[in-house]
Image (cartoon, rainbow, N blue to C red; front, side, top):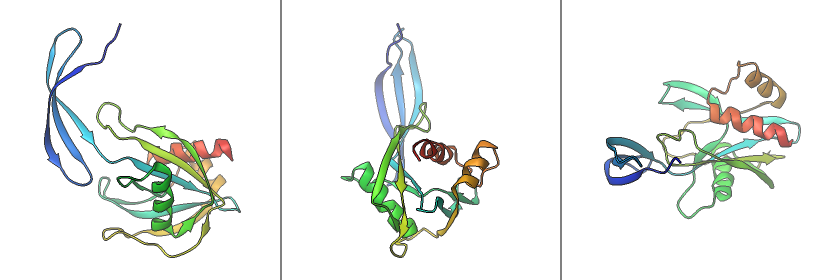
Length: 180
């Protein structure tokens, strides 16, 4: 029977408000020692699929340094300490887009990299989203907001020609489609 590995040592290699990298020494159930295994700790993340009454999806366009590109994606962001995933989703949607919704549906919680990352991504559908105010962006955010026909985005994902590049965001849109 497969068993969990034991953490013998864990030390922080790097830490910032956004990410912590740990180096760990592990003991496998067969007694073998894995001297250097790495794990990333990040805050939990809320992903929001905002759909307007006329079946348009609200997307954000912004620079992502990892891919060094401007990309379209669904609103998303870290959940603040002391906040529930739903509270974080509502806040992030409003801050990034100026949109709000009275009906949020929890579409589940997922991990993007089980072998490396320890955080979960919480996915929500925001039904009947509507513009209620201005964006309230963080110091390092520059975000353009635009709505697209939902069916166009879903078809693009299914045909592997989506304007949304991130797989987690694509999954979120397809999960939302299932409950709409």
